[in-house]
Picture 1 (cartoon, one colour):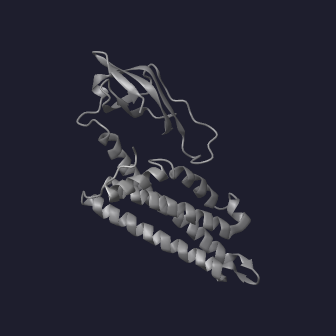
Picture 2 (cartoon, rainbow, N blue to C red):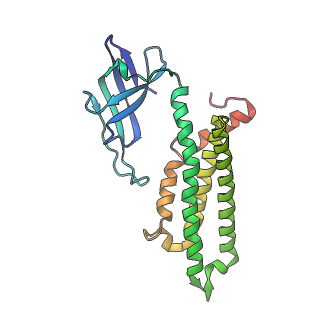
Picture 3 (cartoon, rainbow, N blue to C red):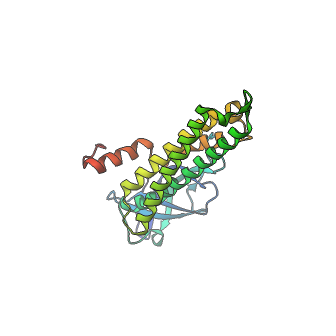
Length: 243
């Protein structure tokens, strides 16, 4: 968090940059978290067309290729004072947004896993080898049975978390656990499903490799796999391993 702004009397002056921002190349509005001169985090609304505000696109991605990604660069951008978000400051403001995003990922990863499982299941009934569908072999059934078991467990985790959110009881640590577990579950299922399809699994005829590449990004974004592990660790021990 090096992006910062200074009070210039009738406006703020914003400097810094953000990377890996979805929709950056064409968004008209950017909600930017930056530190003031006291080091306190605030949200600022930056509008396309403001002098010094540029949004170069990120190219040559091998994951999330359907998503337009770029940078936000602020070079002495004048921000009207009414563009600062009211009523909330500090790290809790952006982290509240992250909690919502991470909760959504916990469900989205299930969707990717379900599609990989469904693809592998259908293929196992159609692909004939040694005189019968490969779904009739024990090792293939083991893979499918474990896939649907892990998907069901992740669905229950996400469902319970949703109930707690509706009751206003879901914690950041619980959301981190769901995000980490469900993404890990999904990418493991994608890899197993790809194996079941053999060479066909790497072709564009099937969706598995697309899910697998996208999930490699999901492991990292909205909090990395390892950081969510430490959030859970701190929650259960009461000891902070981040410092």
